[in-house]
Amino acid sequence: MSALPPLPAAEALGAGVLAALAAMPDPACAAYADRFEHDLSGVFGGRHAIAVNSGTAALHAALFAAGVQPGDEVLLPALTVVMTAAPVVQLGATPVFVDSDPATLDLDYADAAAKVTDRTRALVPVHLWGRMGDPAALAAFASRFGLAVVEDAAQAAGTSRAGIAAGTAGTAGCFSMKDGKILWSGEGGFVLTDDPDLAARARAFRGHWLTPPPGSHPQQQLAVNARLAEPLAALAQANLHRLPALLERRRTQGTYLLHALAGARGLTPLRPATDETWNHYSPLLTIGLPRPRAFAEHLAQRGVPNSTGTFRLVPCDTRPMFTPSARPRCRGAAQILERTLAVVLTDRDDEAVLDRYAAVITRESAAWSG
Image (tube, rainbow, N blue to C red; front, top):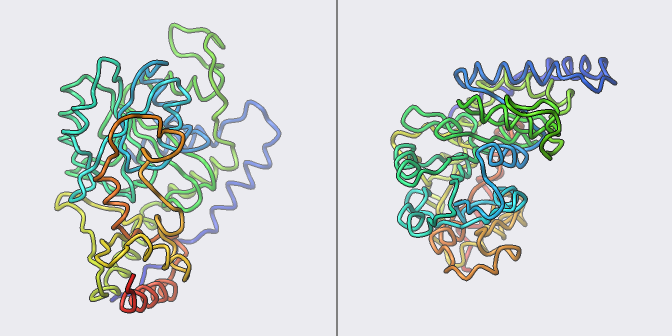
């Protein structure tokens, strides 16, 4: 297996942050955030970009801007994290959890259709582990029921399917830049949309409605403070320039680890769709061993970070804050999480780290009896 491409030079990261710090304090300053938004629009093909302080804030702003109101219902996969559902609840709407297909990780559209009511306003597909569902199926479903589509593309920067980039398939796309994401700024996020009215409403919402959309007045609407701090915007902009190199490194890391695990007992790589260009956010393997979740937890204890073993990821419809729902549990989502080993990587993981992960996984899978 060939060596990893080098970690892209980080010298430019500090220069912008220092320049942003030198301009502070300046309560009205947004020069770096504005530049970052401009550069995002270029990278993603002319879309409107709204920088915010987290991926959760991106979903909050986009759902609000898409018209989600108290009493509405929003469809979202049970195969997600609490942070996807929290903005729905914060807007006074109800999250309605939809199952996923274990064979593809995509939404189970039959289950979704059965859960649409006259109160359903939006659908939030989640590109977990960087994997993207079928954009044609997504568009057809949304058109059939007249739903806004707000993508949770927090982990999917750089992924595309059928030539459509994650975060650009729907009404709006929401990204996280928390430390550990491929495009990172420590904390932060952004919204992408082709809709100028939605962009204006999201931009107003992230800043206390001080810059109102056309037809509104300053502070006419209650909103939030979700602006991206200038030093973090400078860091995000510098990393955006490094994004092609960061993507190349992550894809090579994922391929390297999966290659090193070829032949490991009871583990089968979960391949992307034939028309999918996957960012390899987390190398994925199906666990065919007894008590697969316990095996993932066992690996975490031995220094291999992974979604279910380290972060205890479970279907969102089983979380305590959502369990009052009388709906049946989403069994496909539970099956996916029970059987999937999603190894957590960072851009600093070199061959030595990946070789250690592969050695531990191979050794422990050979010895595992459950």
